[in-house]
Length: 158
Ligand SMILES: [Fe+2]
Ligand SMILES: [Fe+2]
Image (cartoon, rainbow, N blue to C red):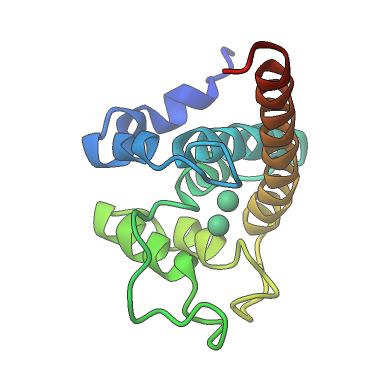
């Protein structure tokens, strides 16, 4: 049996112009685009789902879509109301696209304990773990990039 690649589970999303707009959203975790971050979380979720015998479709799609928002909703009170963070917007956007309740649950809980609803499926835990690993990697990559630019500036003055 041929193993399907990550891209085969999410190709419709990768080709979806509104989703591609996430390329324009730079500065996610400092210096990454939101697309690059989402792609990495989706791919890691896909791999973890294979290892832990979870639903690969749900994990891959939820991982890719967990940060599908553009600008923060002005009435969302991120700090004072833990239920009104960006995951609410991602759930809304993915729901409008027609994603399953399992995918929406994994998106909704990806910032637990922020948001208060605990992940209750294997796929939701996988997305939670993948997101937490990838944002640390993002920060590390961003830091390295900044250091490189800083050293370049010190040597060449540009
Ligand atoms: Fe997020
Ligand atoms: Fe994220």
